[in-house]
Amino acid sequence: MRLMALLTLVTVILVLAVLYAQNGPISVHFYIATALAVGLPILLTSALMGLVFLSSATGHDESIIDPTADDKFR
View 1 (tube, rainbow, N blue to C red):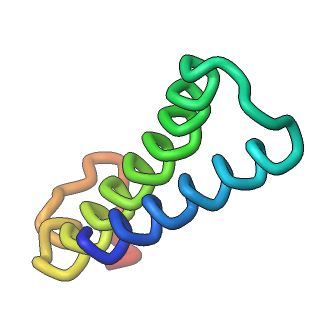
View 2: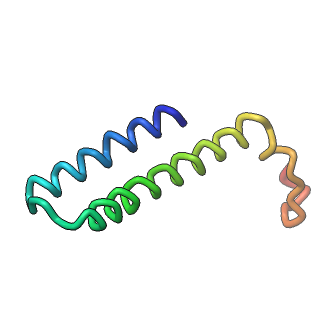
């Protein structure tokens, strides 16, 4: 998560720098909204992906009983 937080921070800074270079000074609210719109989805995606890998690695996926599974294929 720390690596993804650092990567997100670098990405947000890069996006804000490109916006400033192309448009010049705009309202501070625009930059805040852009930083949140870029940063939060990246952090949410990395957290959810981390949970998927954690669930798979700890065996929680295999411990679920699937009532729709056909027993003859097990």
